Amino acid sequence: MLLLFSFSALTILGLDFVTKWLVQARFQLSESLDLVPGVALTYVMNPGAAFSLFAGQPSSLRLPLFITVTVLALVAVIFYFRRLPHGDHLSALALGLVSGGAIGNLVDRLRFGQVVDFIEVGVRGVYTWPVFNVADSAVSVGVALLIWRSFKPKR
Image (tube, rainbow, N blue to C red):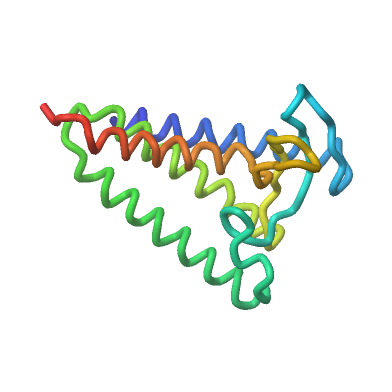
């Protein structure tokens, strides 16, 4: 299970790093490229948390808060992982996704003081979901898998 956890975390971390690097290398800030109707690559820097929460707060408050919350979340993930029943591969995968995503965004916060986001979904001018990245997606999928797993009977 450690191998699955580590592989999923490192895969997400690598994908997150590469995709953010590509966007930063090929796009100007706020530049956008429509891929298909309703999906675009749009390079933004997000100083806030999910849905840009706390983006308006001063960096001196926001950054230490986000770093502390991320580190505490990673400690909780490790604590939870160490107590997984043998053979709970779905939870190991989910925790790896959460860890990889959390570390990916933490690296951005440490490097830039904010997070590189670039996936835009919706109809511009009507409604768009807040721009996000691979790390955000991995955290969301990982948490969804953990919730789903919590309803599944344990053997």
